[in-house]
Length: 99
Picture: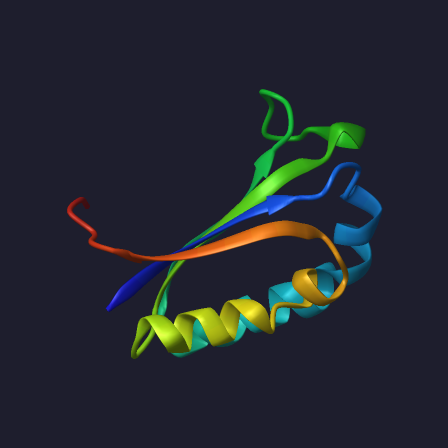
């Protein structure tokens, strides 16, 4: 089943994000390589695809996991969690309708 991982950043998270990004992206690449990643990306803190020093306000990941518990365990182990980037992480079942 698909699960949406919705994360909200702490204030001024850009430096923390940049430091932890390689490990974060490597984990996403593992999901991609396994054919389980639907989409992933950050929410710019301003209305721009390149927010510069404004940084990001959170992230969205939609991926396939065996269960809600498995998705939560994966989300809890994210390098952004360990680095203190995320203030809050929600994991919810997701039903893809389109495309």
